[in-house]
Amino acid sequence: MTSVSPAGLPARRAAYDILRAVDAGVPFDQALDRSIGALEDADRRLAHELAAGVLRRRTDLDARLQPLVHRGWSSVAPELRDVLRLGAYQLTALDRVPLHAAVSTTVELARATGGERAARFTNAVLRGVGGRAAPPAAELDPAAHLASSCSHPEWLVRRWLARFGAEETRALLEWNNRRPSLVLQPARLPLETLQRLLWSGGVGVSRAPHEAGLIVEPCRPADLPGFIEGAFIVQDAAQALVARFADCPPGALVYDACAAPGGKTIALGRVAGRVLAGELRLSRARRLVENLRRAGSGRERVVVASALAPPCRAADLVLLDAPCLGTGTLARHPEARWRVGPDALARLAGEQARLLDAVAPVVRPGGWLVYATCSLEPEENEAQVNGFLARHTHFRRDPAAMPEGLLSPAGDLVLLPQRTGTDGAFAARLRRVS
Image 1 (spheres, rainbow, N blue to C red):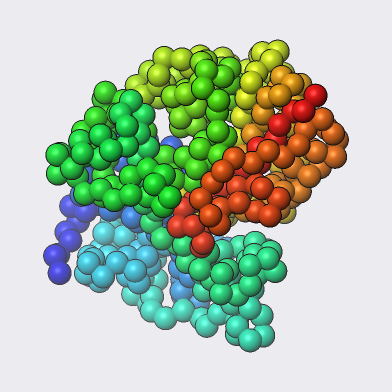
Image 2 (cartoon, helix red, strand yellow):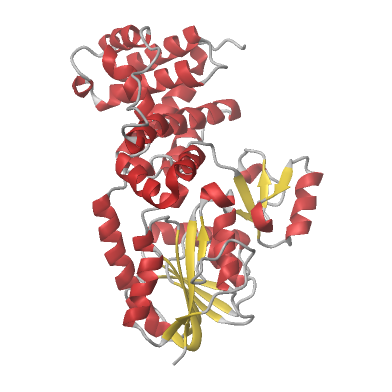
């Protein structure tokens, strides 16, 4: 076991900065990019592991720490709570970090962020970290037991238990607590050629489920062969399967209504005649432009516009990848589980209905509307589509052919992480018949 000295403080400080940014509302991936850029590779990996691990195991960590704070957990400042969580995570989850190093580096972090008093308090608390209070008995309250033991919101666990049952729900929760795979999708190179290029560069590669991309060893994508040339994009297999399900006709005019960061835009652009990529927020539109310049086909055009006021009159195919609760991507976005709630679900369902109604007139007669989310919740998925079809009787489901087991009885694409080994996603392909 390699000893860790106080020189490991930069990685801990970066992890702390990520947690504070997430607490302020910054998405995890953006907070990560901002905080680890100046670190060496080993420290980058450690900072990522620490921050993501704390977010995935927050319930467990708090259960270990709370009994050690005599004045109550609520008396601890939010900044110091994150310091303590980082220390407790190292003590309980990272075997490669010696116990003394976990305590000493966390105490140094507390001193750097809160002064000597915070350092003494942190030292005293971490010396007592050990076992946690037992979760509620599974026999008496299965949802509370799973929520506590797997560190998920109880309201969400109860929903999933009702839909999936105990075995599948536990598998889903365990999936969400894993570090997600890094998956590449071919852009300016075919899949086979990209795989050979990566092999030639000494990169370990395997095929993603359903041949939907390549899984590579954890690394910085910009360091991989072919990145600068736009040979690939980073995108989970689930989103690649949504693009495949859209089944874009060759030469079609496509309107991608909520396009950033551009993975599906790039996939559609490989076969379309032109793709109009809309994005409301300027910062996201800039990122979309960057990705298209690096890996697009040249047939994509970006426009800053709201999907509620589409910037085109008619298209052969409209893709609405709608804002959603994101419960299919909790492994990739570990902070999101603590931000979602029933109120947000109801609000988003209303927004999705308005967006669907707004983009429907853009679909030319005979064309297609593809509605997609990265949610597992029926209110955002099949119920949303059924409501749309009731309001717009000139649309019909028209599913594309997909691998066995990926389509619902109604013909919608349904990807559940515990079954497919991918992120969760949903899509419906609707044809305008008049």
